[in-house]
Length: 111
Image 1 (cartoon, rainbow, N blue to C red):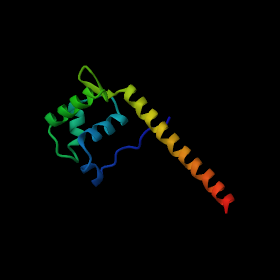
Image 2 (cartoon, helix red, strand yellow; image 1 turned 180 degrees about the horizontal axis):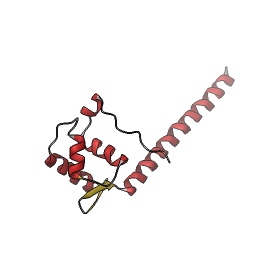
Image 3 (cartoon, rainbow, N blue to C red; image 1 turned 45 degrees about the vertical axis):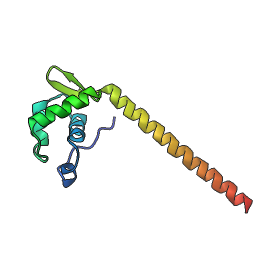
Image 4 (cartoon, rainbow, N blue to C red; image 1 turned 120 degrees about the horizontal axis):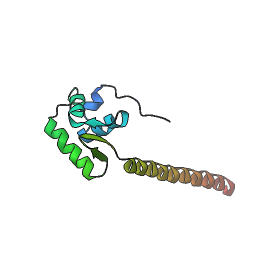
């Protein structure tokens, strides 16, 4: 099984939305409490614990996160929807490339 790369502290993380950072942390380790998430994110992004809570609630309302007791983890249903989305986009791209290749072969025959 392939796991996402570990988060490296770079300038790019300063520009990311809090929700993206939360998802990124929970993709590497779970479950985590709001306080643990806050302590990790505040190292490179100024955010209050209240801001983290607000974002966690929004992500939970969107069924991206699941809350169990005081801990959060990514929803497997949401992860599966990402996989399905990625597969459908890949299929569309591959089909388009195949059509392009067939068209270029046919185009060469018409010359």
